[in-house]
Length: 72
Image (cartoon, rainbow, N blue to C red):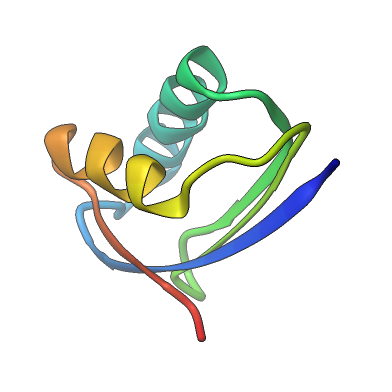
């Protein structure tokens, strides 16, 4: 069952290199179907193949220096 996750970038993602590294990190650690990162709008849209805990994604990215919160 696919799950959609929308995140807001608070800090740490400033360029396309950061976005690429974030995408590779997420794809390596979670079953990601698609991911869209908009650095200018500070938004991340993720679709996973199966249920993934959003807090786990946020925690992993925080370890890498990226601070995100879930969009309400």
